[in-house]
Image 1 (cartoon, rainbow, N blue to C red):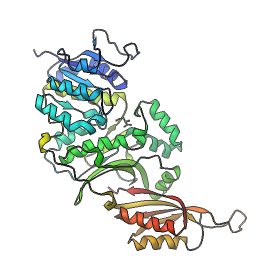
Image 2 (cartoon, rainbow, N blue to C red):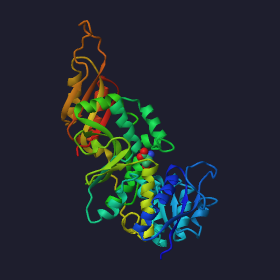
Image 3 (cartoon, helix red, strand yellow):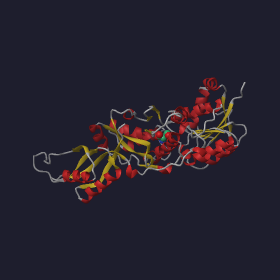
Image 4 (tube, rainbow, N blue to C red):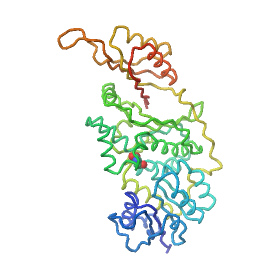
Length: 432
Ligand code: HSE
């Protein structure tokens, strides 16, 4: 009879408490599947007194994360503290150095220090599992690391932030404001402690950097990711997208190009008929081997943490990034200026004869071909039939594939021509 795996958990927030509950509820199934019992024997968190709705009787309370990591009475250290630095970093290092396996949901830490930690895991023989760091309940790390080990991957992309997808979905479907939707995402436990990590795209960038490393065998490099968030997306963009047959999603895209690996996070127009456009609410999705599932929240994240613990119990010791750290290649960053694709452009244009011609000319000078153009109130007369004073009107353009620097050169020229007011809104289009 193999002794049960002794688990120590640092961090008892939404996810930590859910992991304890799940191990308790699923105990039998877990030991049947892993051939070994799994028991939480010690925990630590900032406050011992806080009510968590889980029974901690019979579980030791460690002084702090570092003490728990070094405790010889545990085999597997589960880090659910969060944050890209201390105390999580030293605690994980200490656990790995003492030969323990580590399970973490900490994408910020893996994106920043993943290589260093993977080296320690290799050197001391423990596992370093971080399935919960990307896509919560969706087993995307395992899929890329193990399931697709024999396949050359050219592009990995997806909706990787539940909070942003939840906000965009509710803004689109219910016409709610950005602020209202964000408040609900926070209340439901989807958002990060600092929600600007979600809405400014950094959470997606960290997850994308991890996926790109697994997909392309490169060193995880968050600094190589171009990032734009969703806070500039206005209800009129969502309405225009709908009318033109698109939806707006915050995508993380990593793609091999002749110039290196393009890694980018930005709001993206996707055709309504595409599978990624059907992914709504807090759900995340990673096509074309389509993985769709709950992408944030305590229970979803806890299920991935428990799956990682089960792998440790089974004795699986996969290389954290799918191959030895020494065999991961440096990331060559492809310049965003050379990104090629279609664009949605919304301009506030002067409602005067010749404006559309000026815009079309500037685009043509950059060899940009227009797929469609829509002007919102073209009649130029008021309710009494009298000519209206010229005022800015929204003009929406969809371009065929072109280069990013050409788009910005054309828009700078249009601004110099003084036929538009304010900053143009530009959203990249991803067709499939
Ligand atoms: N804040 C993250 C999200 C949590 O909304 O996706 C899951 O990583």
